[in-house]
Structure formats: C-alpha cells, structure tokens
Length: 570
Image 1 (tube, one colour):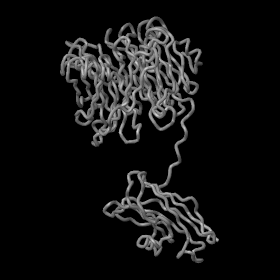
Image 2 (cartoon, one colour; image 1 turned 90 degrees about the vertical axis):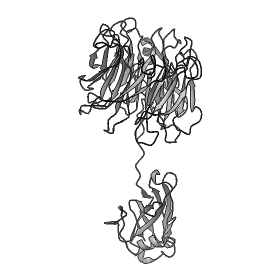
Image 3 (cartoon, one colour; image 1 turned 120 degrees about the vertical axis):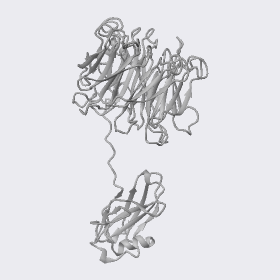
Image 4 (cartoon, one colour; image 1 turned 90 degrees about the horizontal axis):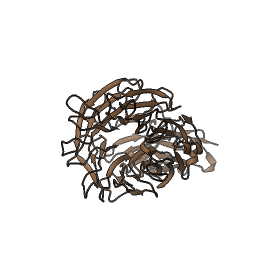
C-alpha cells in the first residue's frame, strides 16, 4: 500500500498520468489484490464515512477471491487499511462483481453496502443470482434476495436510486440481465424498498437478448410528480440494427417510459454504462451520459450526453475515444464538481485500451464546464484493465473536494489478475468557501448625511420562486418590532404615517423604484434618498426602517423581506 505516491511510482504500479491538471489530482493510496486471479477492483463504491473519521470509505469487489467464493473489502478512506470484509456463499457465485452504497437502514447513521452475486444459486434455481445488503458499520448481513428463475443472473448491476416510496431513504435497484420474462435474456430491473426489502416494481426488457439492466442511473424528477426517475440500458438490444443498444428512462412512480434513445450502428453497445450529470445547461433538467463501448474487438467506443428534457432535440455532446483507447465509455461515474465551476464532471473508463499493450486500460476525467479532458490515466501494463470499475463524488481525503476510485481488475499485484484499487484526489486544493448568504433585503450604507443628498442603495433578493411578481417598498419611522401580519405573512415594520404613504402613494415615497416587478432571479434594486418633499431638518437623528412585500397575481402578499435601517445624521 502506498500513500501520496509520485507519478513515477504510479507508473511502477501500472498506470501513468497524462493531461493538463494532473499535479492537482494525486494518488491517495492504492491496495492490491492478495491472490492471483481474484480480480480485485472488478467493482468499487465510495461508501460515505463508515468509521467516524469524516472521510468516505471505499468498497471493492474481488469476485474470484477467497478461493472462488468472492469477497468484498471495505477499505479506510484515510489509509486504505481493511475495515471489514464479506465473503460470498459459494464458489462461482461472482460475489462482489457489483457493489453500491445505499442509505442507512438500521439507524446507526452509516450508509449500507449492496453486493451483487450474479452467479449465486439457491434451491432449484442454479445461477439465479442474488443480492445482499450489509451494514456499512460492521458488515452484518441485513437482507438477501435471489433471482426468480435459473440463470436470471440477478445482481449483475446494483445501484442506489431516488426515494420512491416517500420514506426519505434511497431505494436500490438490482438487475437480472438474463431474465426471460420479456424474451430470452431480455433482462429486468428490480426496484427494492430500503429497510423492508419489499419489491416495489420490476422493469422488463421487451425483446430477447437486450440484456436490459446492464446499466442503471438515478435521475431527478422529470414529470413533476415529485419522484425521481430511473434510466436503464440494454446494450445488446437490436434497436435500429444488430446490438445497437438502447436506453429508456422510466418513471420512478409508475414505471412508464418517459424518454428513450438508441445506438446508431451495428454492435455499438449503446447503453452499456450510464451516469447522471445533473443540470449542465441551466434548464432545470438533468443530463445523462451514455456509454457505447462498441462491442467489436476493435471498437473504440464513444459517450453521448443527452438532455432529459422533453423539449431537447439532438445530442447535447458526443465524446470520442483518444488514439489506441478501446471500449471508451464501458464505465462511467459522476465525478462531482472537481474543477469548481458549478457543473458535475465525468469519469470515463476504457479498460480494453491498448496504449501500453492489449488491455492495459485507461481512464479520462472530463470537465463538463469546459468540455475538455482534465486528466488521463493510462495503464502501463498489458492486461491491467485500468478503468474496469469507477466510482466518485465523495470526499476520501477530507479536504472537502469530491474524490474517486478506480479499479484495475487485471493488475498483477500478487500474481496474474490479482487486481488493484486506487483512490485518488479529485482536487488537491480545497473547494472555495460558499458565497456569503444574502438577506432578502440588503443596503450598502446604514447612515446618510443630511446635507450630502446621499443615496442608500437597496438590493432586493426574494429568490427565483418569486420571479415576475410585483413588489412594493415600504418604510416606517417607528421601528421594525413587533411589525404585523397580513395574509399569513409577517411584515417587520410598524405602521405609521410614513408607512401608509409608501403603501398608498408610492410616487411620494422617498424611493427610486419604490414598486416594480422582480426579474427572472426574483431580484430588483432600488434607492432611498432624501429629495423633495423629504428634505426636512426634523429628520436629522431619525431612523428609517425599510422592507418590501411581494404580491401574487391576485394581489395577496406572499412574501415579506427583512427590515434594514437608515439613520439621518448631520
């Protein structure tokens, strides 16, 4: 195990760094498999903080570990040391081929770990596959389920998805890519409720050999029902031609298909990997990254980014493979905002790349804001398969930035195909502090000199939910406490003669822009000044208090700001 390794030492372990900002994204640690052929790093998941040190732990699967039983190891985010491990039930179960982190089930404040074992068998159902949920804190088994029929291969992919039943917890999705209900190996996705483990819904492929459920991504609500949606890939679907592939977005509430896209060429394998990227274009709707590794032996692969908006036309962006990269887009992960530009970035795995020999593998970190590669990691050893698993978006090193983990299932750490897992910093520089919070009403000064004809500039920030509504500035010479309530909204001004003038006769009020309409951000600006008829000596020493109210289209007050003061001095 190595910590804070140099790039030269990284090359000795089987990868090298290319690209522009590598110096800001260092290796935190790496852990190798402990036996030949265990394929450690076939799956990885950032689990959140499980040991109370404020850093995310990393889970990684070795589906041929423990003498073929399969094993999942949970590693400390701080050091890479083993926290706990779980072993599969039987040889050949492929236990640990898929892992994912899901919301706390047992009330201990720690996230739990979902593990797929697509080769597992149960009585009368050989190869049905299984899924298990383990306590993140200590590895205790919390739940287990099996596929419905022999060779369904439940557990091929596992993923956390949005809260579908309203209990405030994430649910989890498990796929059975060879489920025959919709046709031979049509595939299916089973949605389970957290805690109870009840099956909420099953989404089926609708034609043979789609392998529906090879990939899953959770999306925010698209249809306005308050429930998140689920994207599902079927990369072997004969959508427009042989194995072109398809992706469908299903309603999380009903399972109805809301969006669908297809690959364009023979054996594109479109939909083999999926990843939600949040809203990249400012329309309030998520974008979705779709991997198409191009199944042919010489396939380079590509990634499409699609807008999930119903109004979207065409492809948001297409990312193509660099020279000698293979299966580009076979793995995808949301990296979080690693370059601090306000947009979610993307990790792309190409485990079949041949840059350093067949199957050496490669990974690209791509900026959604600049549409450029931030970093390329390239395996340096034949059959290393760097990028065979990816996960990202949680803080591993404790500096506040989103970090990531990369699996290399073929690395020869302790013999052929023993595998290796890397944890890397998303950005060595901590994220900038959040901008200071603004009150709904702010003023640039709190005093005006009587003889100066000065101006107090007022910034109105009600928020975007009030965009396009009318506002009115009000003022009082009798303070802001206790104020009064109208239409259920508290207005922090005491009503006096000045108040009624500003309310009923805004043209006489000591404001420029005493009334108006809030812009698209729910904002406006105004000025307070002592021009005529307010240029009166008796106001010296007096304190004005201002606030504003917002009206809906029916004239009802729906919002009132805080009060700000301005004292008139000599």
